[in-house]
Image 1 (cartoon, helix red, strand yellow):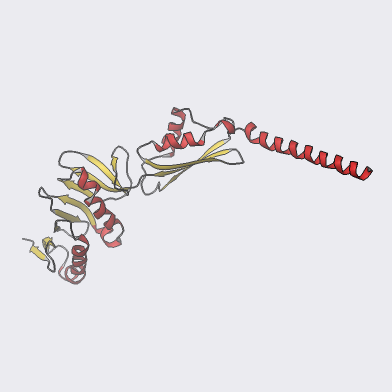
Image 2: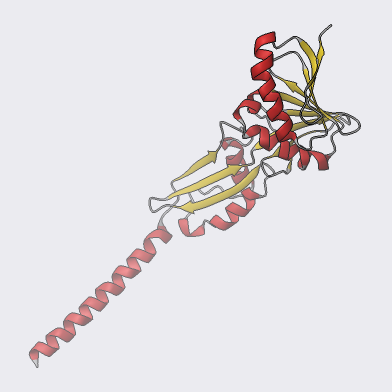
Length: 245
């Protein structure tokens, strides 16, 4: 009988202890105050569009600066939604840490192509084929599309072409400018060699550039990169060169 009473009291003490422990653990985060903000901007070296200072200013502007606030008062979802609405930000992840910090990881939109058309429009196309404003400074070296470039062409055909260039080490280093003529034909301005590359229509650009790459290696490396003023790869299975006068 005594043993049963002892076990019952022991179980009650354990239950009381567990209840108090849970209460203390639950109260601790609520009482904790945010001691700092850790902000990480991905791809900042490549793109350089959004800066840490700008993100911090956005948080303060909308009353979302977490420092000094109770941890249970910080709405991480609201912070994510507010920052994600910025035109240069692609995604946001926000979370608190047990040590009392708020961490924000920002993925910015990465520019792929710059467009400067005949109408005076100046903007970027990102790696997802979306138009970006040119208001921010970009530190990356990008090909520039000029001439008769519509926004539809920039975000479709030229986006696909620029994506091909970016993923090819040789052509990414070689092509500086994509010039669109009035009829839609395309000329390329290389970084090496004083000549124009006439593509005609962009269709079949992989095969056209493959032929040109072979000509570069077998031909221009022997006769010199400045011998011709124009190299046409418009037609299949041939390359037409115009000698420099």
